[in-house]
Amino acid sequence: MSTSYKHHFSRFLGAGSWLHAAAHSHHPWPDVSFEAQQQAWLDAAELIDGKWDLVFGEILPRAQAHVARRLGLPAADSVCFAGSTHELLLRLLSCVGRRPARVLGTDGEFHSFSRQLRRLEQAGLAQLEQVAVEPCETFAARFADAAARGGHDLVYFSQCFYNSGFVVRDLAALVAAVRDAQTLVVIDGYHGFMALPTDLSAVAARAFYLAGGYKYAMAGEGAVFMHCPPGYGERPVDTGWFAGFGALSQGAAEIPYAAGGLRFMGATFDPTGLYRFNAVMDWLDAHRLTPALIHAHVAALQERFLQGLSHSRLDALSPARLLPAAGQPRGNFLCFRHPRAAACYSRLQAHDVIVDHREDRLRLGFGIYHDPADIDELLHRCKAALAEI
Image (cartoon, rainbow, N blue to C red; front, side, top):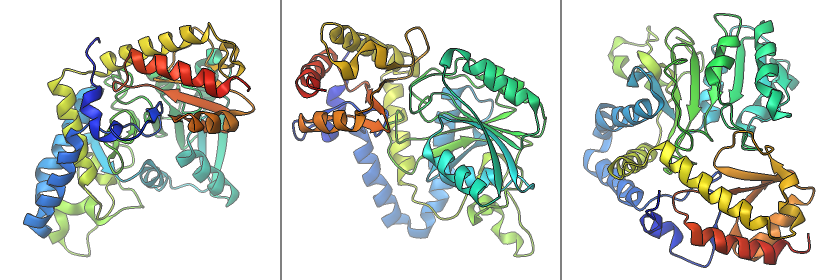
């Protein structure tokens, strides 16, 4: 991809001297999302309560269709939206009748999952079995073995792990390894959606898929979604009135659920994120920017950055510290393990470089708003900031 798209992000990138290298954390929004944000306000002002007819009749179905097409889903109505992945996780857990719920996960899941499961375990409401992600080269086989042993109410794993960038290539193999037919299987795709080409057609009838707009979908908060396979979690106990929005006239004696993924809806929410999401997806379509093209662009920038590092002597960014190891599939960010990751972050921030760190992991992420000149400047600032670490 030789065309530069940086100018489409002028509102986010136009102020200050910051060099943003955290697409994996909070991806800048393209300018088209600004007009979408305004349109959401204008629609609310014009329609007032009637805006929900527009949201459920037009805005949300458009967003469902965008998700379904990019993931190879057989039906767009399997997609539900919410304000956060945590919200949807709690509704999924409410579908498990057993307490403590028996959960299989990994030691590389994001806090939305790991913090909640640890607290539920502390309260005696869940039993969590964790499979170590590292060593990455054996993860798939080890996780499949654990899933095949069975006895789980919920099985949860990431498509791309937030604290390393390691990518599970064969999602279908891990889903197929789950022994028990009624176990809820959940793929956390937040670092995969719109960053990696993803085809869920082989697992759409069996697995849930969670992702959202905050990262590579470039739409910000409030546009989290979940693909919900039919026959699993048909009546979540944690439920809001929008899960039966189309059947409110049936009366209080009934607890109806919408068909498809909307059975996992909550209550009143801010639909502005869906406006931004649709605007960004329409913009990507207009420029024929697919996840495959975006990933190829980022991979080339990653290679340029790593080649540039090979001529330096930066211990913090040495090849030996890179996760996952060379040859393992990687998402759209680079992760370096270093005991002084927090100090590296602070030094880079002092040189007007925005990255982030998670415990002992320093993460640098690229996107379509970067070009080769940005990578060269990033290398220059890294060498200045990290020479003494």
